[in-house]
Image 1 (cartoon, rainbow, N blue to C red):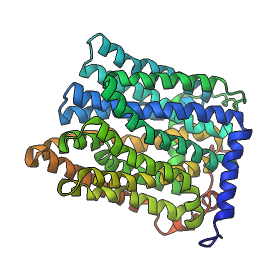
Image 2 (spheres, rainbow, N blue to C red):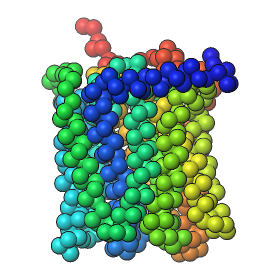
Image 3 (cartoon, rainbow, N blue to C red):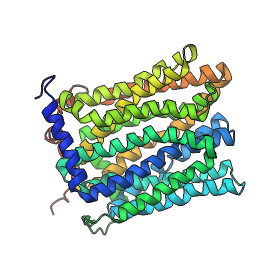
Image 4 (cartoon, rainbow, N blue to C red):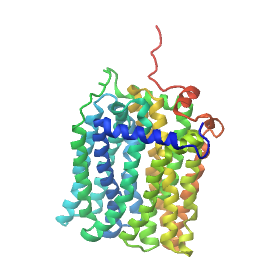
Length: 447
């Protein structure tokens, strides 16, 4: 074990592994490049689409909450079936198809704006369709990576992908704010449509053969049930999934209502809000870069405990933005939270990929994503309702600040769902397999 001050050799090894993936694995390089561009477009849309609703169409807090619901409603409706389909199909083709659907859906917004046909129902439709495509994309995305890199390089690959996501989170909101100021929120979505096209081209250029899916004669329902059973029966994955689902309740109240608070509660323009969001993204980039070093020093288990609490605690300080300088306070909150979001994401995804056999990884990933993201539509309704009530009782400033602080409390408290004593024994991914077992296709009973 490395003691404090002696971490250079291990960190150097981590950098060497990541550099090897970039230089020697052209398929991963194409996959990584395409996802980096697409992630940038995603962040621009994540900022621009709600801005269209709030600034251009002047929707109410309740309608804003409903709009956030449509982007995630696909997970409880079709998420489990998406995972079963992904295990039956070429995962690369699923990725390409999902990007094509998202390209068309997002591209309708600037076209509607150009023809003076922009409306709230259109935004709901775009959010619903692109959310459904993203549901399939996410199930295939995490299941496809083990086909591109060896098992021992999964942590390095996930770290590089998280670095790209975090870099996009740094550049996306600021770039979106500038583009919105220059050409308007609706036309800013052209950039996201173009990013999906770039990702499609990159995916089609991957040359390595993907392991063909196993031929299945059963209907989807038994495989959906199998995915649920695999997650439920694995003691560590069940607790991780529960903790993440509860955390997403708090996340929805904090992050999903953040733009509403910034625009309506603090009265800030899009450019300034974009810069505030960038602070958290810079921290997320730092978290992605140093998450493996932190996990080596503390062990994966203790790292998850620290990251779980520290994702939410900063949002408890939101009311300080009402009595002090709002921009520095909110930048500090998003910075502290953003760092540990990346640390949590990289380590939980790597653990799941390492513990799960490839032939069921699509179902397992989709099941986890469905369970953890199915709460977000409900949180959107809850957040919209709380924002409406809070605004009516105390005004936009105090009412919306209270919603964000409540979200932070729930977000941090969700960490208590983890096995607080046992998880400390998990220092490496191998320890999780040794302690809790591997997630594999159940063997049929002997006749």
